[in-house]
Image (cartoon, rainbow, N blue to C red; front, side, top):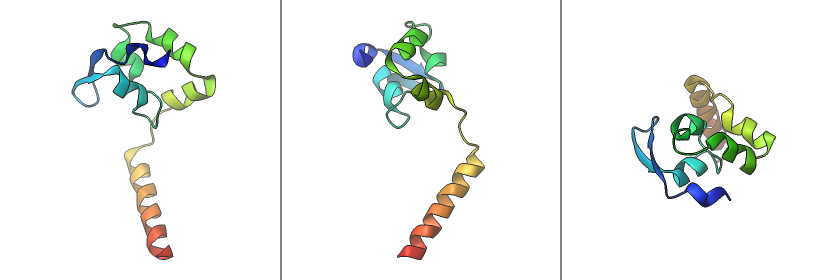
Length: 87
């Protein structure tokens, strides 16, 4: 059951404050944050939980390295330019 740990609170190393596991479980477009193993390994068997609740393809998405900020910003700018051209 994916929701079994949702009410537990832990410290988010990315945001710098405490959050519920529910937030961590869903913050990546409905999938867990890529740092979920780092933040929750002391609280419960997070690796086992991931293996039981997510397919290999989902796990790949969860743990793939994020795009560099410059590339993300460039993509956002390109999308905005395309929207302006179509309006």
